Length: 86
Length: 199
Image 1 (spheres, each protein chain N blue to C red):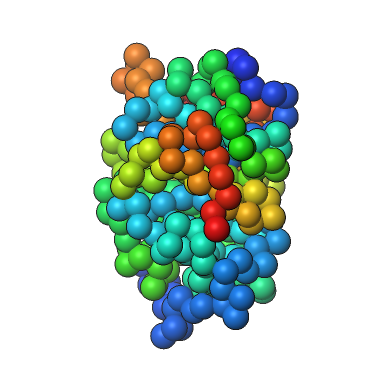
Image 2 (cartoon, rainbow over the protein chains, first blue to last red; image 1 turned 135 degrees about the vertical axis):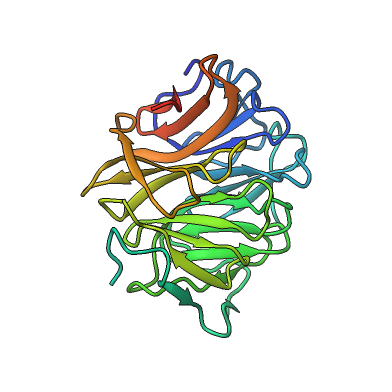
């Protein structure tokens, strides 16, 4: 689907309130689409080697990502910027 | 040993009394390789599936406790997860060697949900957000293919070969296809793919 780097998609998440908003986890980081899988953009602070990603259905502006090694990152703006969980 | 075709009923596998036990190094246990991450329906418990098993966090990923699954060597390699969208205690997990496991009490007790699966290497699980008793499972190796259940995992039926390439993640997405169904998305070694779920 358009705009993603070539490679393996390890993780995938859909916004609980808007199914057109999606995140994917890849070796190059977390990418975000607002168009159901096209027009992907990379996120600031995105974790490299991303293995999995999810939205929080209780607070959909929050998203979490895990790297292959188990480092956890959080986004408070729906996946546009990321920071490590401390 | 768990086999495909095991009956859901009668295989109630009760975890130890300390079903969820803290690890000595609870902050970040040795996951070895993370495969999946998801919240429960309420957004309180964050679940993580890894090569070394299933973990849960109640503080947004700061600390983790290992959940007890029916033992399988080092513990099942958790490849995929599908939380019920409306019931926070219901979670399905797909494993590398033990098929599909289901809990309806937040992880205290697990049942094997493999009836109809011809293989136990499950690399993707998707739950329909509109009809949560309907799920799809992607099986690799023996019995490879895409399976569907319409009764919450009591019986699976093979419906398709599944997407080409190695599937890493599977999800039902509430985007209408125009044909009465929604889309099934797959993250694979060949990128992100989608297909109407009307197999």
